[in-house]
Amino acid sequence: MKTDLIRRIPLFATLSEEEFKSIEHIFQVKNYPKNQIIFLEEETGNYMYIVLAGKVKVTKATASGKETILAIHQAGDFFGEMALLDGKTSPATVSAMEDSRIATIFHADFQHLLMANEKVVRQIIQVLCGRLRQVWSQVQELSHSSAYDRIRAGILQLSRKHGVQDARGIIINLKITHQELAELVGTSRETVTRALARLQKKGIVQLDHRRIILLKPKELQPED
View 1 (cartoon, rainbow, N blue to C red):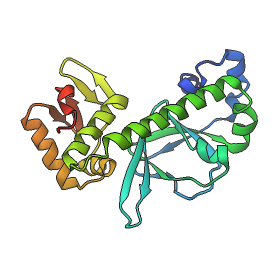
View 2 (cartoon, rainbow, N blue to C red; view 1 turned 45 degrees about the vertical axis):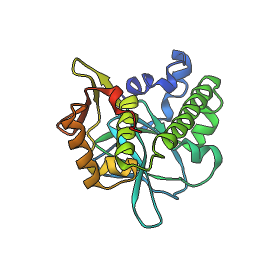
View 3 (cartoon, rainbow, N blue to C red; view 1 turned 90 degrees about the vertical axis):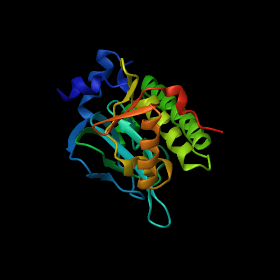
């Protein structure tokens, strides 16, 4: 069962059955309950992690101790590869946002088996390039001085990765609290609550059991 889940991960989708069978023994699967730490910032990386189910958040603490969310990973995403590639410590802490099922690959297997496969290396490079472009976009969008505009930009970012289109609009398929959204855009929970109330009043978004629905996505572009 675990290999069936892993086989569908985009990272391994280009492998032939023979190629996948040659590496399927390297995966170990573990369940992480909501809020459990998967690894801490500054730990030495020994594994690459692949999300099979659930969602995890990547966070970094500021000098004042405030937590900032850098990224949210969902099923099909992987993380922890940077420490294995450059041998340095982890640049951030990763924890489960909800109950999650994660496959791990030990660093020796990562180096000797995955990095020796050209197809896998190509997929890893594509993902890393995509993340870099996302960071550039995030820096640009979240550079607004107005917290309200940063919140709008943050919601747009979430919709691009976690959005599912339906008759009402775009549902952000992610249960995110006001505090977590505040940590994502660098503001306070109270400010997020007020901004969401304002956006609901304008008919731009709708809240449904902690999920945000974009009713008018085009109107989320930052105001001048």
